[in-house]
Image (tube, rainbow, N blue to C red; front, side, top):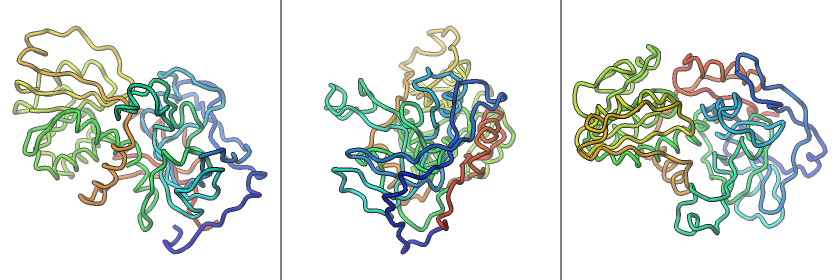
Length: 355
């Protein structure tokens, strides 16, 4: 890892060089190993953009949805990945926020239009013409990427890149989901599914005095939940021992919506954190929605969410549990994610700062 005092020199000639990247020629089930290691030109930053050399990129379930085609294909030969930690090595015209060598993070929201009715009221996560990293624009499963500097986060030195990477989506979306659940200090909150995002949310919830109840099908995940202070841990469909004031559904399984709603106390809220969810079975009004139980979705994030989560990461502080893979093992990382073999979050380690 590069020392905090070291600066990465800008190398204008680097645009003529090549980089390694994991490309997605066409979506397919992860068992088919659809990502292919390839050499491609290092991109040049345009107006308002910076070039980033990637230290690490987190592996998110949204990446799996992109790779397997659960989300509509946006472009050919896409480079996935949107939990990026790296160093600035080039600046396009009109940039001023970051100097070469600055440590930065890139998240899911690549850019928003800034002028639609949602952007102008502070809800850029609902922008009418957004672009997303690793879906519309090439992401961090590569040695370099470009990003609009206005949507890039400043990151501190001195923390390993693999520990920071999950904060850029698992942390940010988890933070927004926690806010959307309207959990208050001291409340009982339920987490359905316990992967990369939930293992950070439990730390946020406990920092606010909440009792956390975790429902997960995987023994590995249940063990991690206990180690992080869950008040109770059960299987995916096990009813918690007490009514919940709030709940968050992290698993992309629509059939968990009903037991999660049924577990809520009067006036409770269930926030669904994923970008993709399988079909939801028919609801029984009296059991699942009556007594002012609320079901709400979580859509992307604002930059304010990201800044708030990164501040919390320092204040609490948040501790990530990660499993590292080399860039060329991205298919393996996604397969392990899909099959619930990861304790915490998977991260691709791409550059250690020494070369």
